[in-house]
Image 1 (tube, chains in turn cyan, orange):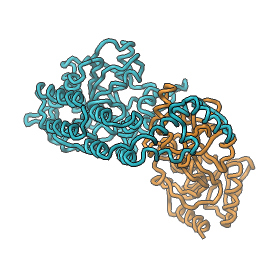
Image 2 (image 1 turned 90 degrees about the horizontal axis):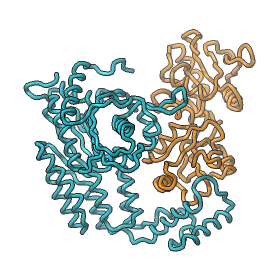
Image 3 (image 1 turned 180 degrees about the horizontal axis):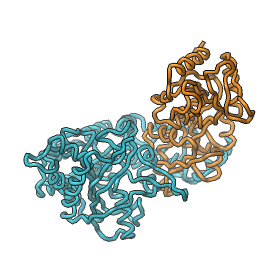
Image 4 (image 1 turned 120 degrees about the vertical axis):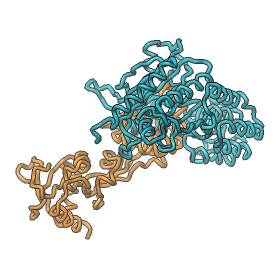
Length: 398
Length: 236
């Protein structure tokens, strides 16, 4: 186990201070969220997979706590402690350690303790403006720290949602596809299955439960009750007969639906495969929408407007690439996502990243959804990238 | 454990119950007589005629821990306990020989009345619906926190909560403290008696008692020789 948190203490401190300075000048109030967090909040939001990457422990009172695996949820909790109704907009910046278990062992770019210097913007209803501002603020901070050579990767989960919503299919399929999006293989398999035999997923359910009548809920519930009695099955646990029946009826409806058209499935698959320079991707997505015969101009327009705002703030969009399937592996993002990649460290170790997460504040305790977007610099990686010589000719951090 | 001389091989075997008896039988078949030294309720022992080996009687779950940390060279314990306690079992230990007893399956089981949930895909499918109805993810009671997490993660499932259960796990769904369980079973009778059904593809691990060596114990020429001797007797 390493005995030192960082190898280049002074360089790391200097870079962190430069970033924090740039962020506070941009109007992001510097705050210090707690390092030790209640584990339950993270488990609810991220799910059990959190345990695989997070130091979760019990304190002497038996409370389940964790070392923060990032600073976004802690910043949300800080905001709600100050404003329980989340009724005021706020912009925060922070600089501190985050902790993650590294299953393959700790490496230089993947350490179990790492520095995050970042920003979060809560409650700004003009989403595209807030998105663009976060990207340009992070880019400005990185450049102030001396980073010259980097690429941007963009993704937008809002576009996928718009495409699924506009495509002709039952709501259940839409939900399932959105849910499966984080698992590329399963997503592909589900798309293929829906075009052939939407009822196949229920073929293993007992036959008498596959022929329930979706228009007769009471009758269906009675049939399920009879099935349990006939087979001597006791009803135990929280899921009662109406809840089980509702799911069975959804499956019956699936099985009776027209299969997804092969053309629609093909076009959804081709959307997911889009990788293009950011500017050019707008045209590609519009062409696809026309081919599918769907109306998603609101989402495409928002995407285009966000790019325009970034360009107006002086961001060089030639550096930016759009990738439709980017955003898949990230836990709580709901819309725009981005990463900053350097040639030396590569895609597996981005120096910064972030995105929009409009459901997170509610999950942490706000009375309703609050627009939220943020990003953090992986400061140790930034220092490595700077040391690798991707600096400005005239210096910056060592 | 390692307060013996550094050249002695330390072997850990289960300290009680059926597992201890079956271990002694398996060693006897291999021509090795396990015996406690000193007090009958003590925790130290020997293999008759093998002064180069020290035997430690410890609980089966501790044996996995001792192998993982290298406090013993060799041990007898279940695969379920080894897999649960090590995310990197292959680098920490070597499975020398399956011993043919202690057979049991670690399985995912749901209430039998969940007639709409027959396999892991069905289980994943109800996650969102359950959350919408009850305001939280469904709970999985288990003592196998890591096995459960890995099994669910390999199927892309994250939308659930684990509730640690150290006893009578099969009773938690009826008691209302969990919705489903991951537990060890030999015949499935206890599960059925508690109104539970194993999912069609819910086999997490097929376990039996194994003779296992530690890759991280302080091996010397002498202990290697002692280990080779034992391994040979078990593999003929």
